[in-house]
Amino acid sequence: MMMDATILFQIAGIGIITALIHTVLKQVGKEDIAQFVSLVGFIIVLVIVIHHLNDLFQQIKSIFLLQGM
Amino acid sequence: MKIIGALIFIMMTTWIGYDWSLQLQKRTKQLRSLIYSLQLMEAEMGYTYAPLQKVFSSVHEKTTEPVSYFYKYLQQALTESVSDFSEVWEHALEKLLKQSALKQEEAAILSQFGKNLGNHTFLQQEKHIHLTMHHLKEILNNATDEQHKYERMAKSLGVLAGIFIVLLLY
Image 1: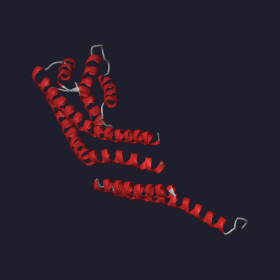
Image 2 (image 1 turned 90 degrees about the horizontal axis):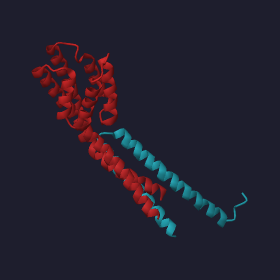
Image 3 (image 1 turned 90 degrees about the vertical axis):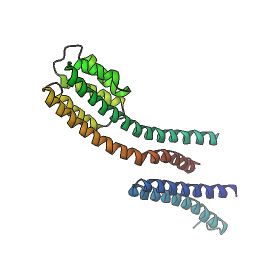
Image 4 (image 1 turned 120 degrees about the horizontal axis):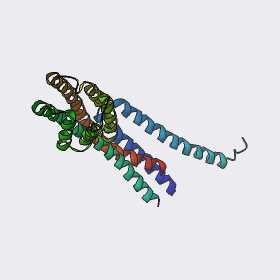
């Protein structure tokens, strides 16, 4: 249960920091790099989420005894 | 233990960001001192008609750190007999580039200037000095713009990148 909370905070932190970097870069007129940073942040979060979704599906599989399939 | 490591990491990236912004500041400062040194050289040439070595030594005494090293090196190089002055100048420029925050742009202008130094009458020499100063002032303007633009970005980006990576690895 504790691990769930940290993962939430981690993703929230990454989101906030990415947004900050985006605004800083946009202020000095580097829009392209700002977009790129946002994209990278998004992909990183996506990878984390997919990793944990994978865990979830494995658990569902094991609960319904579908290991063999 | 983890937290200490994270703090050290953030401090390090913050320092890198500050160093970057300091580099931008230094460049404008050094460009100003370079322009000033050219003015000094012009005055020295105009009023004393001294040989280059003496001009360099008096400019060296009146300028600030990285630029003054440049003139000191030139002055020392000229104590021995020199067959090709522009070669000495190029060598001094390379050293200056390593010691200072100056970039290739102004080095190219200065190397052009070095090829003409000492080969002309004072009037022509004065024109070359003015031309070089004009170019350097243009670069200085660009550098000040860049400094204002990127100084704060460099600082905040250092801190933010540190926190970002720490969060990723947490």
